[in-house]
Image (cartoon, rainbow, N blue to C red; front, side, top):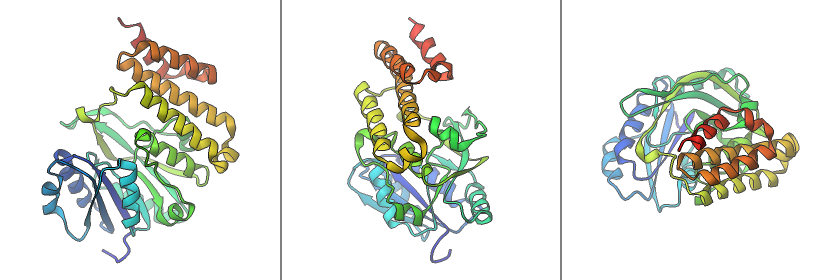
Length: 298
């Protein structure tokens, strides 16, 4: 490994001893080997350290800190990273062996690229595909309409990231939306380059469920995202207020769906009506049909 690796792979983990070993091993099994792993333990109270200790080596750098939520852990990891490109992976996801090689090939062939992404799929713990990758034809437009990216598969030039001062929100109430906010702010400054190649997977399990949000948490996340974009003069200049309104409507409809799934049907109906008033295009989305179906079920 060179003194300055090409990639810094940042893992923020909290009480994922059951999954973290497989995640690290999937990174160490990469075809491309010029990388470092920055593992930030965000105050785990389980046996995470015991599990990862046998894996600590030249490529795996372990840092423990007090619990402050994953945005703060990722920020801390960035301060410890030295690679040319930053990339992130949650501590229960997996890289396929070609993940970093595909990224390296693209980034060296297109050396002006700052912001890059690759596809992923979702599997259950037995390896069954739950959500297959869908080809993205216009990634820059698609990202304005919803967060089709996951942290896994996103690569950002570290120097640009540091120079421009972007950071993941460290506010606990914003957790779950902080990555999209970051991608949107970067998108206002750098074109997203994207390959429709599946090189990783997200593992779905019970502790990762999205069915138990509180209404106040969803509202806080929605309002914080809109506030961030309103205050970002570059974003507002490049994309305008209309796009911010569409993102607001998207977040409201997203929240409505999850409120419906958690049987908070009255709130779900109210939120969807508000989303439609802001952007009538929400009527023609799969999310609208899914929400209506759930609301009509007794």
